[in-house]
Image 1 (tube, rainbow, N blue to C red):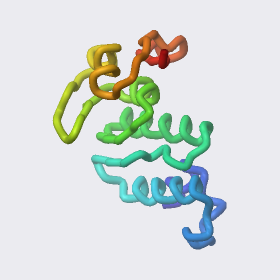
Image 2 (cartoon, rainbow, N blue to C red; image 1 turned 45 degrees about the horizontal axis):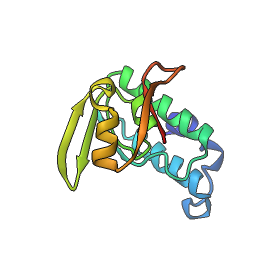
Image 3 (tube, one colour; image 1 turned 30 degrees about the horizontal axis):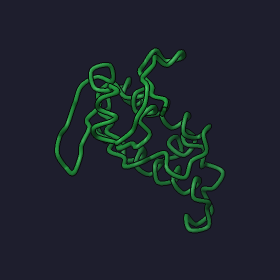
Length: 137
C-alpha cells in the first residue's frame, strides 16, 4: 500500500480521512487503493477527473508503466486526445453500441469525430507522442 501511495503522491495524506481530502487528492487516494490490490487487470472509470494537468500526466504515465509491467489496464476516458496519446487500443461506444475499435491510428478519424461526437475537427499528429490528436474547427 505504501508504494501505491508514493506512486500516486498521497502518502503525505495517509493519516487523514479520505473525506477531508480535495477532489484531486481523493481521486489519487482511490487509485492508490486500486493499485495496492495488485491485480492482473486494473479498470478505471474517468481516472483523471478532478486532477490538475500535472497529476493527469503522472497518472497516465503510471498506468502506461503498469501496462509495460504486464498488467492489463482498461480506462474510460472522454478526453480523446489523452486516449490517443496514452492508450494502444481504443474502443468507441455510442449508446452502448460498439462503433469502432483498434489502434488510435485506425480509429481516430475526422469522420468518426463528426459522426459519433458531433465534433467538427481536424486530426493531426501529436508532435510529442506521434499519435493522432484533434483540434476542433
